Image (cartoon, helix red, strand yellow):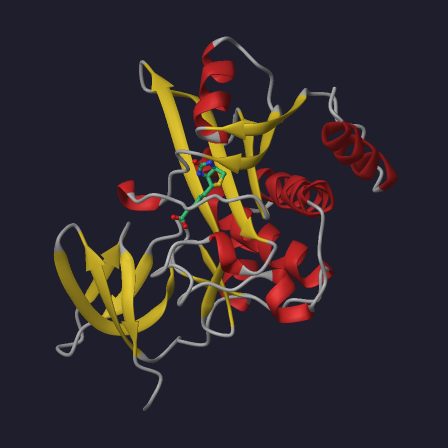
Length: 262
Ligand code: BTN
């Protein structure tokens, strides 16, 4: 076991969490989620976690790349949900991320479906990938990326829209420490999903950008959808009200513009 994996396990133990599953730490990987998918297919248990100091082929949502130079948290965790509300896992992870960031002095807000922003810039992202066999969900690999250090290693174009814990607070947070906070909060909200999914939807809504009742614009499946953001429904879909009063339920997409002026 590497020193980073040992530090993470110890950090979780101090928080009262004996981590039963393996924690793998690598100096460099193409993608922690790709490595964890291999482990999932080989039968790894729930809560197996993989982290890396850098990724050479980090992946983001919608087929985008996730620039992953050293100085970030690149963490994937394996879930094998046996409950109805598994579709809300990305939202639960978003809530966990915001709470973990708050521990490090960052007030982040969630942008649907699951970006974490601080001061209008992206500080963390979530990629949830699932596999099912014969209609039965086998596993979910949840990949979490958090910008810990200032973005010198990030490509131009990302640097302008990103921020980090260090940029905002001046503090350098070790990946093992950040991972401990994320996993601890995630385990709480994952249990909440089993017990009371509506509590997760409420928690997500409370931590979202203050856009409820305001006009938003979304890119979804190659189309632009506009409307007033009403809220999210019990499945985590975004509900928009059109000019004619019609309700549109958006299951996936990217918010490309939020006009905050009335
Ligand atoms: C996004 O906002 O587009 C999601 C970014 C998710 C990045 C994380 S970093 C750890 C894991 N491994 C990957 O290749 N991607 C996720």
